[in-house]
Every structure is written in C-alpha cells, then in structure tokens.
Amino acid sequence: MSNFIRKRIDVATCWATNRISVMDTLEKYEDSYAIAEEFREWILHIGEENENLKSSVLNFPNELKELLNQKINENLIE
Image (cartoon, rainbow, N blue to C red; front, side, top):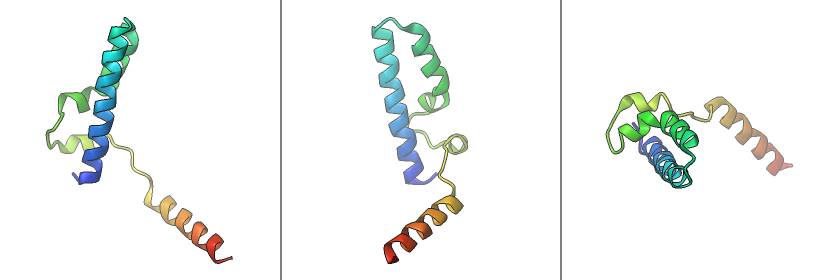
C-alpha cells in the first residue's frame, strides 16, 4: 500500500476515533456506534499493513484528473 493511501487511512482513523470519543462523552451512543461500524476495519487494523484496506479507500479517477488538468492548462494558455 502506498504511503499516500496509508496516510489517508491514518487521518480518517484518527478522526473517527476522536469523534467516537466525543459522541460517547456527549452520550450520543447511536452516533458513536454508527461511526465505529463505518470505520471498524480501519480502527481494528491501526498501524498494520493490510492490503484489504486499500479496496476501501476512494481514489480520484485518473481519467477525470487528466481531463481537469487539461482544461486548466487550456484556460491558462488563453
């Protein structure tokens, strides 16, 4: 798994665990449970190299990225 994807997972995991803690403190247990279920795979595998996590990370489509870059470059030239 690339470092970029690993960092994205780590940031999302930290956000989720902090949010769960806040929801528990506010006694919003249903919200806390929902977040825990949404991020369960990431939370359970914090710091581990797990290729299964890669499939759950949404990536910006390369074709769309190239199209947007092309449009930006065309606008800069004009």
